[in-house]
Image (cartoon, rainbow over all chains, first blue to last red; front, side):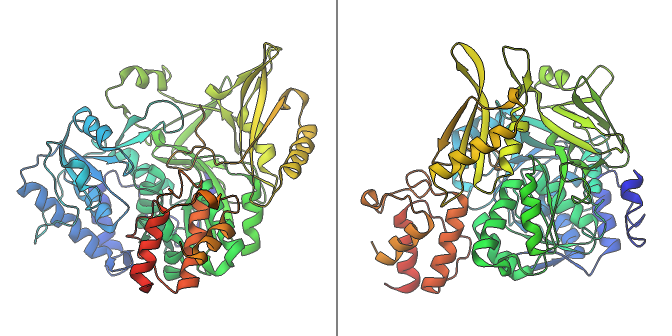
Length: 485
Length: 75
């Protein structure tokens, strides 16, 4: 805990309290930063006072449309200022925001609306046609009432949102987060000395991802920063040059795109003021951190999952601990049992929507969340993630190999863009296979030599028995993680 | 198809088989362009044709890009 508190600047330390609900957050924002810029896009700018007022006007519209607190409301569309205002309005009205991915196909949406008992939808104009054959009341994302309505009396334990998880493995599940969990996750994101308070950020990760909505939006607002909302990854660099961000929250795949574009077009595409990129939601390759330093940007890793409503640990200096995801944030606990990381605290989710079996399996008898990640915590408190338990490859000689651990060695190479380690069968025995996608301009011969070189550095039980060179991109989830079959 | 556009494609994604390139070719599914390729192509188009993207455009096929350029440049 001292790791974070001790490093916060004096004016940051204790300047924001833990607020248990989004209704409390709105009140706090209006009082603390009324005239500061909260949000912007290419067309307009919104101050904190206006943000709170718009949320109130949208609550008023919910009431006028006869929507009752407790209703599940689907929010569907690209990142937009309106989507932020609606999320805050819906949750502070006592409803649950079901954050539906914009990539959802109409037939999947048609099944999701009854399954998640969605009583009203808020789609953006692009998504509206998907709902043409579905019987559900719709509110246009730009609609609001003329005058604001007060927030409802919501409690910390009330359900606030449902996010989807499981994109890389298996069927997506609906993760239920309470107000308390979302607000703890939001506060966790502010433990970034000098890089979250009064900063400029771009929210480009989809708001359907906890990292997109909770970290790059709510944490930033909590700390009085200006967030430019970007609804289209292709426009990211135009936005970066426009708003000149100082801090970014990204998944590693996105940070890598930023790095490659900066290398090709020059660092001006990053806006010229960028100091920090906080990376999480997938392993952060060491080379990402090393290569970004040439542009004066520090990439900091953290660990979290949808079920923990944001990061639960953060690394403040990759110089000192280059492969660690940092230390746990205050007010939460971590332990490693039989190699698995388990966490506890009020940031934990309430369960999976209509899936009590999966919910029971996610928790230990004494209430700790089984993360499913293999980890170790060093005596100095630093956390290291080794891999996913369910991805473990068990060889015939009894050795357990974590594919993520093998991949990490190959990701250090500048010749390799992506790789995927999996199990294969050779001569009737379980063996390790590695698929490799080289960076553009790297020949098959060069990448083959490189994989052989790296292979020789690995402990023998981790060496791939088979290398497959790929020439097309791996299939990836919306958060840019390679999908493991 | 404008030669300049073909040049941009080849510079950005050298493995593109231009003998199979049609207006209906899908940029990601058929040509295998990655998110990074796509962003680099947008940069090249902005520089070459002096056009600005708004973020509202949808580019699924090569034809979508050609239509966009026709609208913006009149050629």
